Length: 242
Ligand SMILES: CC(C)(COP(=O)(O)OP(=O)(O)OC[C@H]1O[C@@H](n2cnc3c(N)ncnc32)[C@H](O)[C@@H]1OP(=O)(O)O)[C@@H](O)C(=O)NCCC(=O)NCCS
Image (tube, rainbow, N blue to C red; front, side, top):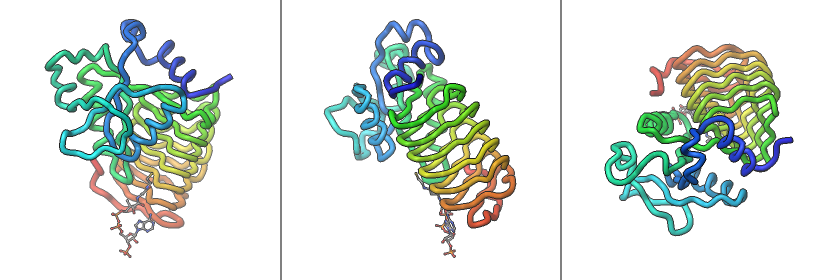
């Protein structure tokens, strides 16, 4: 039976994402970003008894994270200068989005390229089917559901209370925002934001680089590079949100 965020994280550490060397190295956990989403994840980790060692953010930015945490520059990690060896760290992507998901996707790609790994984490109150497949860096927040045989690619957020129904296939770097409902057999491409409380009817296919507005009801397929808003949702080209 599936249980807490801690056991899910441990499971991920043991069986999927990470190398043997990393398992043995007891890595330091770093939050990437220091805004609202980062703070939510920090609290979620604390609920599972997991403390951050530090965070990655610009020196001139403000931080909503709590506690006395060491700060690292993204450039330090990406350049490999100093004593920072990726094997010593495990990252949590704390960058959220309210539309274009560009910043979250860019940071994940750069830090993966530099050799870092990202934690896959689930809130203790999330329900994730045993048959669902979640890739590296996926985050499932409180009261969210990922149902039977759903597949979610790397670095995607399933935010608080969102429902990803059976046999959904969700791409990389997506944000299924708070309260969004995706009916069975829905497909979503990469880098797509599905807005708060949006509803996507069963079997609908949404492309890559799309934005589905908050509260939209998506009744028809949405091609790549479109923004769709309203009830029923009407789509228009967005020029590619990347
Ligand atoms: C769709 C969205 C990306 C449009 O953003 P934008 O391009 O900055 O649009 P604007 O705010 O300039 O609004 C443009 C028009 O669209 C309307 N509009 C904006 N969002 C809308 C939505 N979700 N549904 C219906 N109409 C919307 C505005 O009222 C405005 O109408 P007007 O021209 O008649 O005044 C954005 O409003 C949205 O819904 N983002 C998702 C937010 C979200 O999911 N947050 C969750 C974070 S966890």
